[in-house]
Amino acid sequence: MPLNVPIVENILSANDRLAQENHARIDAAHVFSINLMASPGAGKTSIIEQTLSRLADKLRIAVIDGDIATSLDADRAAAAGAGASIQINTGGECHLDAVMLRGALEQLDLTKFDLLIVENVGNLVCPAEFRLGTHKSVLIASVPEGDDKPYKYPGMYRGVDALVINKIDLLPYIPFKMDFFQRGVEALNPGVKTFPLSCRTGEGMDDWVNWLLSNIERG
Amino acid sequence: MPLNVPIVENILSANDRLAQENHARIDAAHVFSINLMASPGAGKTSIIEQTLSRLADKLRIAVIDGDIATSLDADRAAAAGAGASIQINTGGECHLDAVMLRGALEQLDLTKFDLLIVENVGNLVCPAEFRLGTHKSVLIASVPEGDDKPYKYPGMYRGVDALVINKIDLLPYIPFKMDFFQRGVEALNPGVKTFPLSCRTGEGMDDWVNWLLSNIERG
Image (cartoon, chains in turn blue, purple):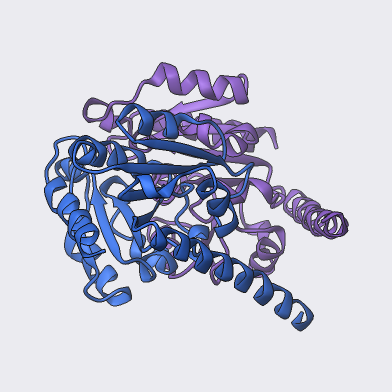
């Protein structure tokens, strides 16, 4: 149906234009921003909590939480010390897009923050297609999801700037071949910065937090 | 944009019409069919493998595997004893729809099978909106995903006929409150048939397999 192609292209570039506006707005406020993406249950909110517990006394951090329903995640971020925590309920939509982020940014005085964490809807497919305007895209993989995910969800793995491998404390209980996983990642996204860690034990969290800090200092 | 509404409705009902045709075709061949849905890594393919290992000597089983890329899952189903194993690569699409299933059904002589298992794309949002025409929809939840998933992904939990809770062998290592999880399920889908199990240890697999058998006998 070639007639539909121009329409799809228009929708995508409208999103990209808004993403550029979001980017300019965040930049102007000297805030470093990340878009956290992952399957449901990979640990986006836990990583936000653990990041806040390590950085909330050093940095002013805002969290924007995308979910289909509930404000459970925004509540957790607020409880963990976020300076601001805004919930976007997508009303069924399977991803955040730039217009949703713009709506949330309008509720924030960005100049009061150093770091903005955007938690996307739990989905390993659709969020990859919608730029938001953040500085970096971060994918959280999770050991119990299995080592074949880069092969099966290449779009998401291809496009990100950093990769967290969460729940490494479960490696003794799960058949997860780290070599096989990392070969898949390397083929799609050579040299991508990777952080194996456990929100539960804290192992590896320092490297992740230092990466955030180095990006903020650079900004 | 009210102009778009009729178009969306037409697309949905076109899918539903095709789903009805798929349903009639499967019914006419006296095959019992399920649509397996879950997040990435919840264990759809592992459950198919374990189901095949218990039933492949009693029943003729066909598997249709939906994935964005690779034929890893269809290969696993074939190796585990499926009488037929067909891969649908969605080319980036985040769900199966009725037209994709129709294409796969055309490659199968359904009269040669008792059970058809359709493995959907790993996604806890989008597949819920597209009927395929199978007899039952089954959601696989997974302990490491966390106990808040019914609250955060209500659309998927609301619409299914049965719920598998996989990876219960990991309960000792993960803070998962089964009561909280099940209260969320009950609010959305009262009385839904639930199968806590572990593909790894085999615990609970008999109840799941017996449910499939009872549906096949009834058919």
